[in-house]
Image (cartoon, rainbow, N blue to C red; front, side, top):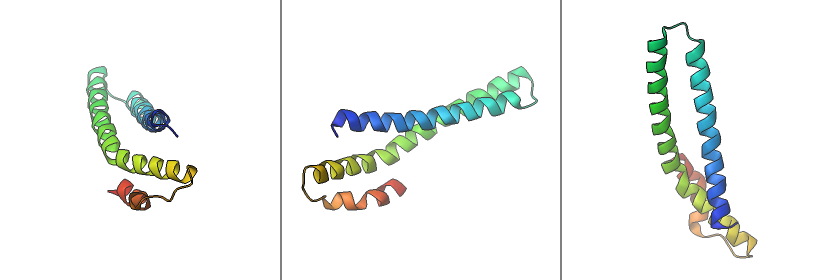
Length: 94
């Protein structure tokens, strides 16, 4: 995989998570029996929280995804994975 493909995969994962969270938040708020102003305020708060969550998730999974991509490239080239590649699951949980 090239670096562009790796970035594309990362962006696709993050976009899927983000879109799912947005849709869930919007549906939940629109179906709640509240006044329009309260709903808009709740929606604004939910969107801000989503932005923070996506930023945090991006920060947490990027090193692990980069390590996995490097390991895959090395295996595809016939080389042995580096020690960092062996710790990718641990990095993803950090």
